[in-house]
Image 1 (cartoon, rainbow over the protein chains, first blue to last red):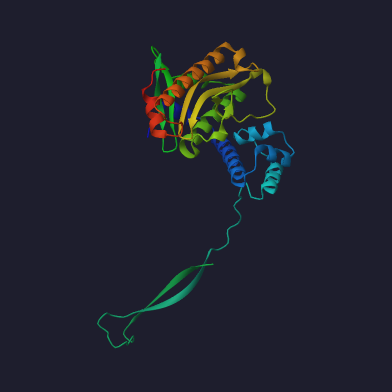
Image 2 (cartoon, one colour; image 1 turned 60 degrees about the vertical axis):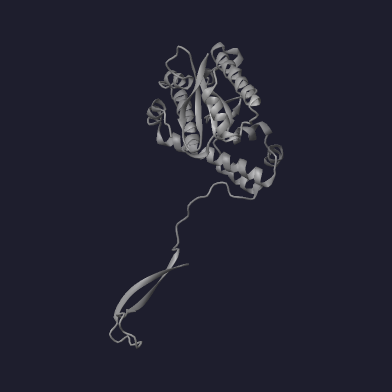
Amino acid sequence: MKRNALFEQLLAKVAPETKAEVELNIDIANRIYDLLKEKGMSQREFAEKMGKKESEISRWMTGSHGFTTSTLAKISSVLGESIVEVKRKSCPQFVVIPHTLYVTPTDVKDGSYSNGKEVKYQCRYPN
Amino acid sequence: MGRLELVIETDNVSIFSPKFNGEEMTEFEKFLLNNGNYEEPQLKKDFDAILSAINKIQNDCGARENLFRLEGGCIKAIPLFIEWPRKRSLGTIRLYCIRISERLLILGNGGIKKTKTYEKDPFLGTIVNDLRRIESIIRNKSRIVHCDYDDYEEIKHILSTINI
């Protein structure tokens, strides 16, 4: 690992929203590029389906374009895959079921649990 | 004459920059120093976007081939988020580079591009021509030792040892 002190010093002054914006644009560009490869679709074919010039699609791939939600929706529809996932309100992922466990001393051999200690606990099962 | 100096190395990418004889800094460091103090918001954002893109490359995705703007031949520029509308008269900042592979990148110098092509700007033209000359040296050396640009260890060794 090697970091550049001058670069890190200047990077620390960059507004967090600028960093986030660039990262998001690059993530979207990478996702579209990977989907095109995965589906064997050329940039020209994609441009035709999007009603755009191929040069514009090339620019999109560099992560230097800010997409509108309308364009993202159209890209999703053309590629048949979602481009950006939005976190929705979370629903419980587990069902909690209470159980009772009888802990019996190890020297009890006859199967009698009458002297066992009752312990209540909860088990989480995938929903 | 000079050498290529390793300026950044992470699990995702190794970034080199030319350091010419008699110079105290690499070309990338010169770019950082010369362009890091813009007060004009548009140029400041350009510069910050370039830093953010390099940060993304070093920490996350490496020098993926789709991310670079073609500037003619093997020379590319770091992706730059261009906000519209913007004052065209101010120009845009360019940082020129040679992308060897996803894991190897050479960052040169750059600056504000106000002309339509870099050839029309003597300062930027010299930067691009220097990088072209360096890429040609690397290409010739890699041919001699029969390795292609995807051979990370071998090409990294070439970059660390060649005279430019």
